[in-house]
Image (cartoon, rainbow, N blue to C red):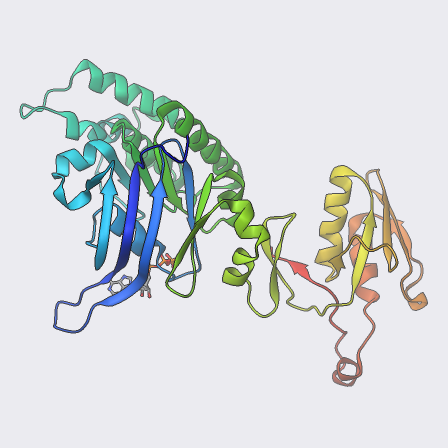
Length: 365
Ligand SMILES: Nc1ncnc2c1ncn2[C@@H]1O[C@H](COP(=O)(O)OP(=O)(O)OP(=O)(O)O)[C@@H](O)[C@H]1O
């Protein structure tokens, strides 16, 4: 993939929004959007609730016309393509549930071949091969004879991806495909989509609220900001440059680089921070416990230091905290969290109100 590769999908000065049936002015949700999806790229679309992700996706796939600008599919203006030409290049799974009655998984996936059928509607050998490949690629081959109505939400989600794959599209657009998936299925889906960009050369664009998923896997992130703009960039640039934090973090939140997620200072103030001295996974989970206790973690070793030794349960020792909190050692993360919470020194206001002083930051659950 190079900068000179012809875009699979392109938005040129697009404004996206809604035209009222009555003569009111159109409501513009996004303005002057310029985006390029290249073959083989995995692109994640993120943004706060109501920012305009679904509006943008619907505009990019031609489900609603842009208020201004053009969407180009493989160089051709979307509005000049027939539905059949469009469907051979662009596959979409939106969040709306699809009512397919008692159809089997295989029959639903075969619907993806309709843009290739002759007017007689006969299924060809190519259709069968494409359906088999889509079922395998999406990991739903074992479900092929089951009625779609019997499946779990996560299974159904994967079947809808298989149906889209059967279209053998150059661009695959998925609206919130991670919505119903547990952690393991999300990781599987991410691996599957990454594999598909390599094997099929398709550009895959998906919206998600899962920041970790969006940042870890994407070649490009499209970030819909609160100011009606969309920023396209490498995930690292958006995270490191602070755009993610500015978009998602409120007054008492910030972006945690290590966890690739937003952390909440729901009972915290800056100041209570500890350095964790441990290695590898033990350090990660010890830092998790420290943050759960309402403290921030820091690389600064001049303040409190939490030393953790491996074991089941682990042994811990806290150095440099106020003396009233002794004993400052124990075993197991539970007692470490209890200890750190007790270390909170009441501020005058909290002492008067009879509540403990807030300490550091807390990770999102
Ligand atoms: N049919 C419609 N007519 C007018 N405004 C709409 C319509 N659908 C959505 N909107 C508005 O457009 C804005 C963007 O909505 P959209 O659904 O695109 O956001 P989103 O980023 O997908 O949100 P979420 O993360 O909550 O799914 C919102 O203010 C919404 O109220």
